[in-house]
Length: 176
Image (tube, rainbow, N blue to C red):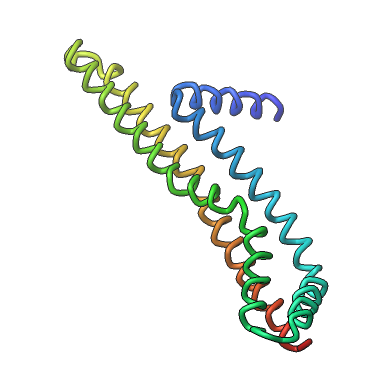
């Protein structure tokens, strides 16, 4: 069993090395994105349990202003709170957006290398062509592997924040 795991790890490292610089960039983006998503999941988990105290702070703020411009104060306080929760989500969205483009860039580079090899050596040896195509496919797959979970994570986090906003808003309205 250990030997099978070791062999599959070696194959993975071989694929990563064959993918080149673009795959290493995608790995770095993947680590960055997952770190931000983990941080956001923890932060939102904590915020979920602090809904009542957040609603109380906003209610107190409205009452301090003698209920003048109640709706405006509520909106501003909620926006300020939510902007802190949304911090970092744009980075996740950018990673989800550019990862397939980086994969496509790798595809173009791989195909270009294949045609360069053919123009230099001719079509006598198919391995010359297949090396470039292999790079193209590896980078495409890597780009999609990075993009898909980031896209899902971003949408989940945005939905969670929207839901949290509505629940806090309801609590504030009930307390007023």
